[in-house]
Image 1 (tube, rainbow, N blue to C red):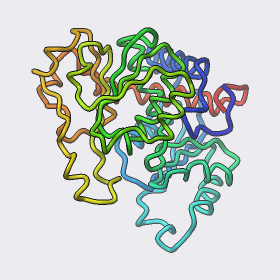
Image 2: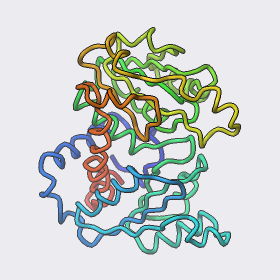
Image 3: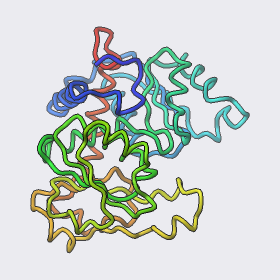
Length: 307
């Protein structure tokens, strides 16, 4: 895997994905063996949108590799409030860091920013576009619990605005996976995403009800309805809370079902599900550290790897 930047899951081949996941498994097995791996390296964190898991896990990952982070902080405390462009901000932070992580509300922002910097840049979410490192930790979680070949995956919720969905659906086309998409009609996969999936030969089915497919699933990937992406509050209210999972719903599922969620959740998974063996979303969040450690290790490795 040799890339200058990681902007989209579409950049990743099966071999790329497996290289990162295998490295993450090595790290997960013995995290202390990696603690001086990148001593002296600095990671720049540039988050123009709120974040808990992505921001903190990148910060933790870099420090567990022996490096440090420099954090831009909130947008309100930076020169962005004075009118500084994204390109100028990234060029400035590039001077302080060996690699950059960018989250921004505008789709396409990471691709644009990558054209102005020479150090590796990782897209940590660009609006409703892509979130490739979330996809890598999602795939790691799936591999650990259900495998990544000859499985059936259901992806439910906000498929229109959900960048985690767009990235994951694309990456799953590298494996023998049957994909089912469950959403309200107004939140279906965008046409361009559907086209790309069909063009890749993916087995894709769309549904409006989970009951139609739940019994077949090996993995159920639930997403929240993303209120902040809706241009109209009334449109959000029409679909808010339309899909909710509780323990009764899981009676119709396989005992081996893996239930995932990129978090944060609102009310789409009842707290009672947390205590079931099927719930893997907190494990999924934990996996962000070894997976991002693996990716950063490869990005920063001068001898090769994910650059």
